Image 1 (tube, helix red, strand yellow):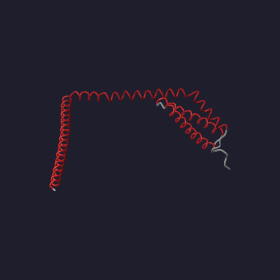
Image 2 (cartoon, rainbow, N blue to C red):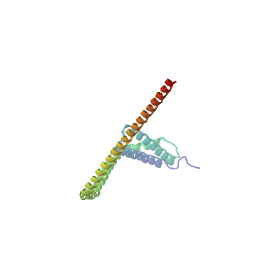
Image 3 (cartoon, rainbow, N blue to C red):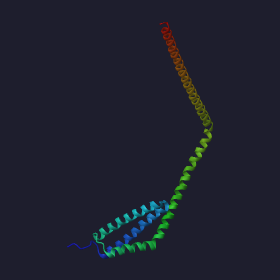
Image 4 (tube, one colour):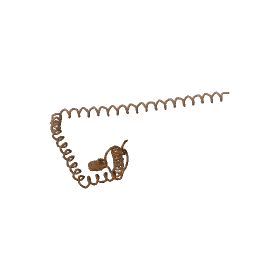
Length: 196
């Protein structure tokens, strides 16, 4: 016959205490994240929700594994004791140690980056110094090319204006010629009518 739970009550209780410690560690990990990444009000609210979802998932998994999902009072007390022990004895020490360690790693990365990047910056500065004459030539060529382009655009615009004026002039001449033809025709018609 199968027993009600897979482990003895002592093992279940100790496991639930360790589960409380684990949930405390998860909370400190979240606090550590907020310390280095400002989340703001909305981000903090979302982070709290995510933490409680993860904590619930972890807690339920522990309960399912140690007691086949039977939630008993001493299991919940174990979780509470584990969390309280962690927060009152270990939390501040672990959190400060992690912050110090991460700050040290960040500073070390910054210094290593500075050491690596310094020769590159030095080389680029020296290279710029040697390339100044070529840069001046290139800049001069670019300026000349810009002037040529501007002159070409100016001439093109002038040609367009001239052609426009020529078209208008032709239209005016055609209009005058048509008016003269109409007047001549009217004159002919009036003379023919007077002869009759």
